[in-house]
Image (tube, rainbow, N blue to C red; front, side, top):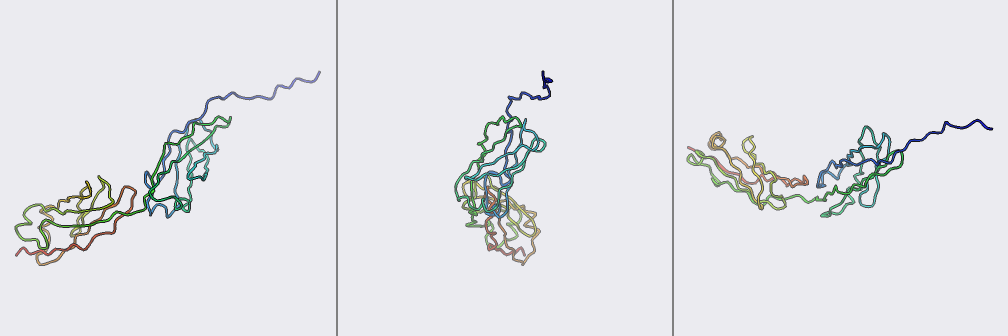
Length: 219
């Protein structure tokens, strides 16, 4: 009789790994600036051994990375991000299996939109008008800003004399308070521009508004 062979051993692993988290470094909206460079999708897994392949699907293309200590980083080429259609939402599909071949349930719940269109700043006005007088600088002033394409809750920043003041967009407009102390610090006989900035949720920045200028006449 041949010597019995007993050295072939196998383990039983019927437990599939899980995909715990999926995030894209461009967030929930891909902007015009963000698609100028490669993007990264970060995936957190449980039960997938080191060196197992993680596959991310986007717009009919597949991208891969490998698990290391429960996570993987997958690069999406800038050219492929630029090929995505403006105004469209895209899901990221993510797959991974363990060394035994058990496949995780595919992840499809991470979705992002493509928004490369910058908002605009349509109008800027100060409640003290084109000239700030000695009565008006005794109280806080208000700068009113009208925007298009900036979502509610986005921050509007007004710059004046080296200081920044902020407000938030609501239904296409924002009111920004300029403290009386900031107005009183302005120099009599000098003209000052108001700079105004806003970005949309995707990170597209409006062209900075600098054309609203006022004079100080407090004497």
